Image: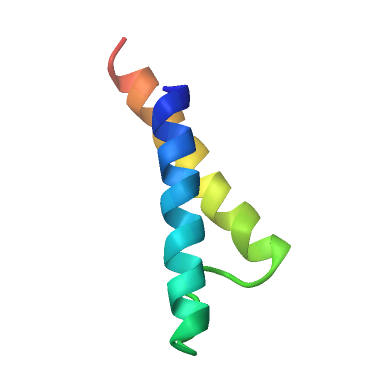
Length: 54
């Protein structure tokens, strides 16, 4: 699981750098509130998936 997280982080950095280099808008929320919204979506998904698997 840690390996996947590290690979996802590296991929995100590379993609973010490519978008900046190409002067494209970043495909992610540019504010902390937006990032927390994405985290909330992820946590909600995990919570429901675990509840349904019981």
